[in-house]
Length: 356
View 1: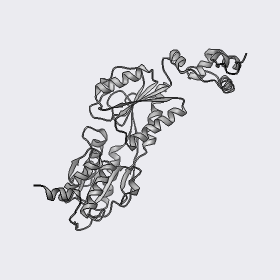
View 2: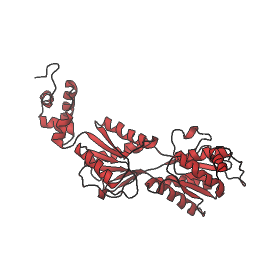
View 3: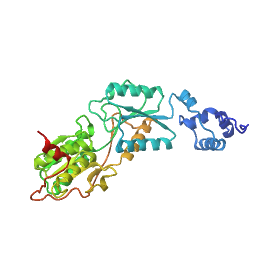
């Protein structure tokens, strides 16, 4: 007997139409047991014919897991992490999962443990942790049977999907060395971030391999303002090139150089990291290290789904590294024999002239 118009369709209705048991229908819909291809096709045809929509609450009761992926991330979305989250959400939706996001103000072991507990209370199928800070170890998180994958950084048993930050920094530095620069500075990111330390290490190691001493090092906070303020030191250091740990700080460097009348790349070559969407439209356009934030999210979800599905050969603590590439634009060029510098008249110089 098929349901009358307006009557809710049940799993029993699907079972009757497909001529199988309700348990078989449940196995097909929840992917929890062996079912022949012929039987699976019959069940899916019945689902489509009856326009059956599974009850999420009932599924959670029967399996102990909802069709939800939990994501723990940091407050203050910017382009890259937002694109990574979009990659997770898009593929999760295509797989029939929703995404529940928990946003942290400060990534401490306590705040992450609380976020994990909150997501576990929702019976999520798995958790993505995007808080790549030094000192975070998943052994500090309460033991959980819920699969977890970290984006970029986390020590412990959780698998990690990341960009090869060291390789990206090497590509940037090798490019500048190849252009003839021998004094190459670095504006690094915060020293509590995995990406920042890996990019700094890539810069140092590449210079050492080239027989060069590190140029001036300063540390920013990823923002254009910090790049702008730290760029002042480059003008006094004699550096002819700078590798910035991200594009936003490089943007600040470009602004200060424009105000000072310093020719980029004639007097100073600038290379960034991230390849944000504006990088190709700056003046000059920015040479930078590119990687696909969206694909990073997709690979992370793929790794998490392997754990959720109990795939064979998945090792605890494993790392998947995505390879970056270098996009060469106008902001990098061959080193000049001498460097010209014009006095600036921008806000920073006016503030300095008025000091004291």
